[in-house]
Length: 505
Image (tube, rainbow, N blue to C red; front, side, top):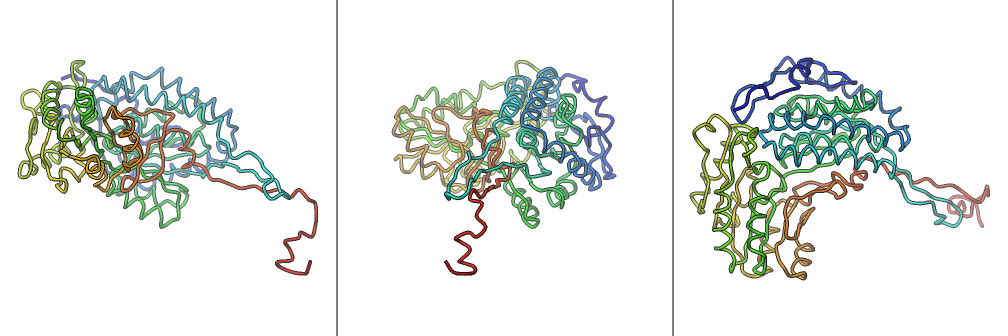
């Protein structure tokens, strides 16, 4: 195992709250220790944010709002282009910090999380100059109308621990590109890259107070942020259960609300699919980020002629996946986020042994990896559709495989959970693919692939997976208010419609 991997630790000794352009210590009176999930050893201890820190961060965002919201699209675009450049310059620092706090393999942080975040910043730098409403039109004949898009105000966002850097970017970039200011609460388990992200924003020239970070617990700092009277909008990514609580607090104050919640993505393999492609796609789609991905392939439905071969192929390929130290270049997947979460995942698998077949995996590795929160890639076959393993979000390196006979049955089973975030269909038939993309109830449906995302395309769910979109120009619909402006063109004092209120024609 590698030692002293946290390069920014000395800098963050000043505190884990980033408010009005500077790092500060939290005032909750409670400290939290970030633990390296690969070793179980403590990495960094900091003071959690309290309600006073949230108040200070919201006040800083509110003070920065008038100036930032009145900046021209070009000015905001220039600032975000500079931000993207700074992120690119310090990319390796983000790679190291993200892999350390999350247990991600370096190749995942280096090739996916960090470059994706830099690209997202570059995208929103350009998108800031295209934040437009409808063109003017004289729809009534006597008036000229147009639509303005205006920022909402102070946004209070909460991000999860599985992709802390990307989630910080997905929350912060569209909000500030649209002219809002923001207070982000990352998970207390993974604050490092959110803090580095805010520091980079300041280094790029974004005004103090535009981007603020409060590192605290959900029950304290998180709920206070969501319910704060000066927060005009809440954006939350996390579990559906916590999302319901966030909605209760936010809607009591009539705030704009954006929720990206849990998922249980189906992976539907029709009998004409390229079997080799489906096997490889299933293993990659199920195991990315150790399965801690709300869009991960979790339920593979395979048409019966391919079922046995698919199960055997996935099991064989899973057995080759290298579980190990995230900082070892040979590692394919690292640990789960914590020992508590690893035990939760293991509990799902152990209970599944009573009603299904664990084909491969289903255990924590020993030896040098025993101190970490590792769990082997696991394949479960023949579980009933109504079983816990099929219906609940396990959020670990576990894929459940079930057979189906007719196309109707496969699509019905794919939709038979409360979730609807992502899905994929595997077929060589264009008509089957078209039907699947129409009928599967999910915010993203891939065909013959699973997982890729793009800055230009929206990400968000159906049903219990929430509502609203991250990334893409569609995200501006979350972070802007629409105003209709209408000008009279007649210069007539007494309008004809006045007679519906007083007088005669």
